[in-house]
Length: 306
Image 1 (cartoon, rainbow, N blue to C red):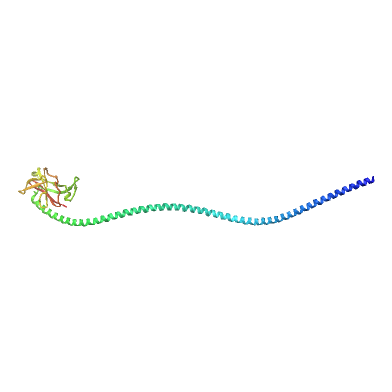
Image 2 (cartoon, helix red, strand yellow; image 1 turned 90 degrees about the vertical axis):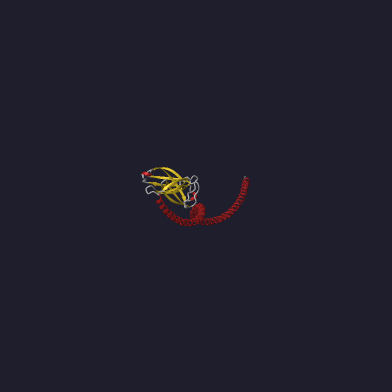
């Protein structure tokens, strides 16, 4: 019994020893594994510590950079505002420049139009000046001609005045004191509009007017009046149908070659008009218009044609 218990105990102890050895080996193996794992962890922890320290340094650097960036950001924000204001001002300036450019273009166009207008006006004025200069030259020549003509007209006027004086003396000698014309007037007319002229080649008719006033009763009644137009030499102007008649002047008989003859009912006072249409043009010179009755000369007047 004892041996069996001893043997059993010995077997149990052996088994326990074997179990202890096995457990010890396992513990050693686990301890080695744990040591290896711890060494690895320690190594990794060291690396992580180094990484942490590096990251801390980087964070510090980044913090400093952030501060600088924040300061730069504030500065840049202020600069951005200034830049935006400057940009807006530049845009306004550009818009103004564009508007000024457009206005300048319009002004330049308007100025060009004004220049073209001024050039046309200048050309017109130059043409007008040329025409005026030519007209002035013509007027100067005309002025000289008019001066010469005026000088001749003065001479003609003086000659006509002398002729009228001589004729008035003749009229006084040939007319009756109480039966003669007054306000005796002669007009040279041209065309069909009764326009007056002094040009012999333009004269188409001779118009004679005069008044009879306070005519005595013995001279009143129907009488034939004769219009006689002569040149400066006393020759009657040509006519297609001359009228021949005689008149008694101060007891002497005169032969008449008249251009017109008309019967008038002579009254105490009246205005008488003779109009003679010329058959041919008259030359320049002196002429005399006379009105006769069968008993004498009523009146006369001289006129001059150029």
